Every structure is written in structure tokens, then in C-alpha cells.
Length: 159
Image (cartoon, rainbow, N blue to C red):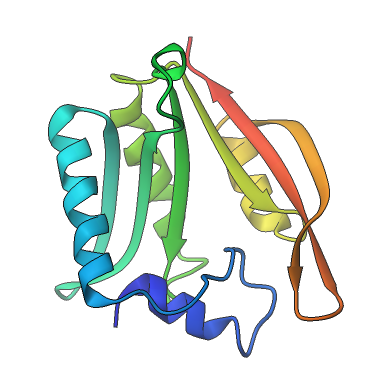
């Protein structure tokens, strides 16, 4: 099972997982399409990606891809990161972000990301890399009937 699907499954037992829930399990065809598109973006130089591997199994991934399709925003990247349960709080996320940002400096001038308001550890990590908050959307996500999740928007500008 892919890392993404593992974390999606984890949401059922832990509503405080820091990624938005998907609309359902993607088909193998959709996963292949996503992976092929990412590989093409990497080849074109429009994506900076790092993968963490343990004993031949992927346990985490950080990607920085074009934030939008507008030619006026081709200098802005969007960061996404995922680390599998059992490998968190071990420095994997730090290494993934560090590696992706190093690659992204060659391509992007600004990197942005979204993080759930309750995910203080992730916010602290991003701030260590120089990310700054530029906005908060209260209640941007609804998980279940009661859990309203704020979306914290952050950015990093390369000098």
C-alpha cells in the first residue's frame, strides 16, 4: 500500500493526521497517472522531489511542484510532505524538506505550503526552515461532524 493510502487509512483512528482526506481511494490507474505526471515535471525541472527509503521501502516523500499554471506564477512552488507512521519524529521530515528545498532553489523564487492549525510540530519545523505565516483560513476543513480545522498558509522566499 502506498504511503499516501497508509496515512489516509490512519485518519480513521487519528483525526489529527495533518493531511486532507481524499474523496476515496484512487485507482491504480490514477496513481500511475499522478506518478507519471510527477516524473515528467521532474524531467522538465518543474519539481523538486526527495524520497526517504528504509530497507527498500519508501517511508516518506517531499515534493515541491509548480503552484499554478499561470505563466506569471511559474516562480512559485507548492510544498507537500508525507512521512509514514513509525518514521515520524526521527528527523525524516527534516531531511526531506532540506533536500527538496535545496533542489527547489534552482527552480523557484518562492515556496508556499498549507498546514493544519493543530499541527504545531509541523509549523515549528517549517519556521526552522524560514517559512512565515501569511494567512489563516479558519475552519477551512471539516473532519467528521465536530472537528473544524484551520488552514495555516506559509511561504518561504529565496534570496
